[in-house]
Image (cartoon, rainbow, N blue to C red; front, side):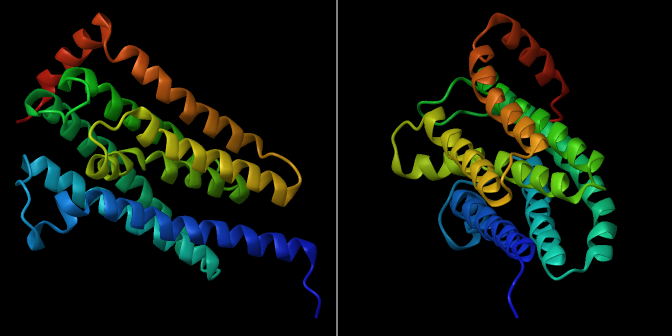
Length: 244
């Protein structure tokens, strides 16, 4: 029986999200393996605080949930996928809360790797990560009844979480990796996904365009403000909320 064009498009789309579900945890594992996942098996500096343990566990749960949701859609278990969406909302709140306190604790007590800005300046990077995560996830929830838009937003959201892992991979091989490395790869992946989607469906998805433009625009914006007096004053105020 000949496969219809629509069915072929759906099959190719499913492959894209399956590839994303495979590459996402691999990049995270490579990036955070030496300092988090493989710590029991290698000699590495101890984690700086209990907040890092909590943050790591929550983010691991998020990655696992993303993989699960992709597989549930692929196997047509839509009702289970939708039910787990409520867990995703709760977990997203934990991601933001744990990420916030971990970031400001690091800004208050941490020492940045060579080549990176001082802690208070660098706080702009994870702070904007939390903003982009919150906006993209809120948009994905808003469009949950429009699956085509919802899954594209979740794909962009997954890509938006890659810079910390990419930066750690770069640190292992480069003496002073810069924004070109840890923001460049997510940008390339977003644009590749966008144009592949355009080729596959014959048109651009407007929601996906807006999401990608929002994410990419956040990269130079955070770099522009991180050394300003206004940001440093705000960062000093934020670190007053650090529990450690």
